Length: 108
Image 1 (tube, rainbow, N blue to C red):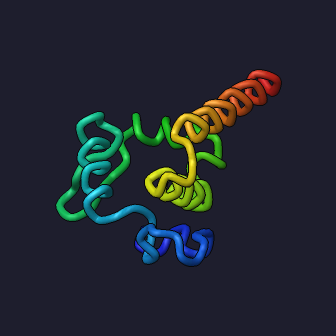
Image 2 (image 1 turned 90 degrees about the horizontal axis):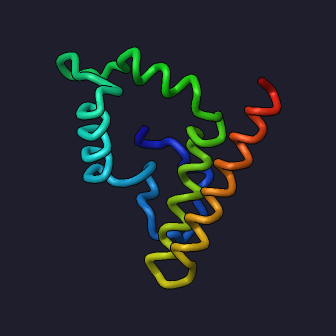
């Protein structure tokens, strides 16, 4: 994950350029995934549980891409700098989710 999404980040954006997020945020996310039983520790490895694998299978590809995460990181950076609106960001994500659900329902 250290280099995931690096190519999608714009130059000069205040996010960690080596990869997505920071070691501190990744640690919190990992602990949350363990707590919710999506992954488990196996010595130094993290293993997806059956519940975690099911989640990965049902989530649309665009929501689990490094490019999407990098795009969201850039938008969050703009929000932190006061250049963008948190409300608009969340509305945009909500619209993307609604569109994805509608497309999924059409294909059933």
